[in-house]
Amino acid sequence: MKTALTNLLGTELPIIMAPMFLVTNTKMIVAAAESGVAGCIPALNFRTIEELEVGLKEIRAKTNKPFGVNLIVNKSNIHAKKQLHKCLDMGVDFFITSLGSPEEVIRESKKQGVKVLCDVIEEGYAKKVEDMGADGVIAVNNGAGGHLGNIPASVLVPALKAVCKIPVISAGGVGSGAGILSMLALGADGLSIGSPFIATTECEVGQDYKQACIDYSAQDIVVTTKLSGSRCTVINTPYLKKIGTDQNFIESLLNKNKQIKKYAKMVTYYKGMKMLEKAAFSASYKSVWCAGSSIEFTNKIESVKDIVDRYKTEIQEARENLNKVMG
Image 1: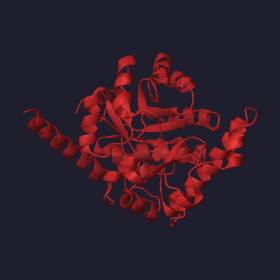
Image 2 (image 1 turned 180 degrees about the vertical axis):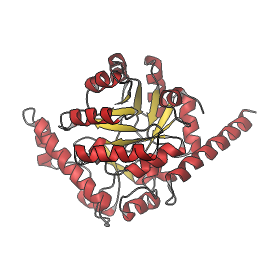
Image 3 (image 1 turned 90 degrees about the horizontal axis):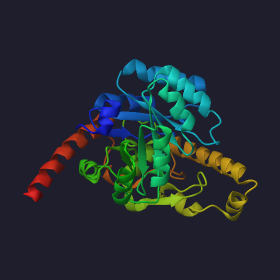
Image 4 (image 1 turned 180 degrees about the horizontal axis):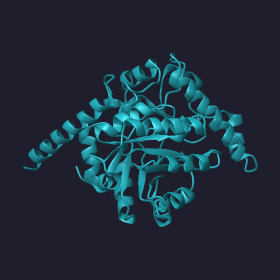
């Protein structure tokens, strides 16, 4: 399959294995690259710059195919600049920027020919990052796992295609070959897919987290503000039902106070990340597990390659079914 995304990144399929905080690891990135898609790993999945360097070296030693790094570019990530320059030194192929202005990332990356894709949730910001020099936008829709947008893919993708000349990659709600084909039919140049890759053999999260992705479905995905202060999708486990999905009165009050809002958000973000870290690796259902509605298509634990190969088969079957319908 050839699209603007495969041309941009040099992949076989127009798919990015989405960066997932505390979930994506180096094994998954290598497996994705060798399977024909481009994996992307959050820089924050490495505790130190030294660990980031070791991880990037490990990936590059096992594959010469393209992979990327996700950078959080708002003030909550005090290591962003060091992460950026370390990744550039190590020769990553592309960045995905989230939660802030990508201006510095774009400026520094262009010096070395590294591509930059930016998370966006509406047309205005998409046009803004295009004007900054972004190479593509990740259209984060209301079906995305983790931090999500407000607009359905069926509206967001065509809207961004109407205002942007750079590639538009749809993120959220897709976990099958038919879904992939439908997004391409909408005009998307590719897809960012994350949650279906949680229950994989290469993933190192706890077995209960993987099993939850199998046992629960799209209707069990709910939105919480407890993790970062922003809307985030999680699996509605008994524990989550017990603690609720909304910030308590004190948390909400702190986040509304203009003078201390920035610091309150940093505290909330830190607390939320610690909750996620415990949830990802603890063998207990008393946890908060990030996932999106595309876990609907997770029925068993399989390898990253198995999932990508299944997508290839399902895309072909969806094409054949469409041809039959169209006569």
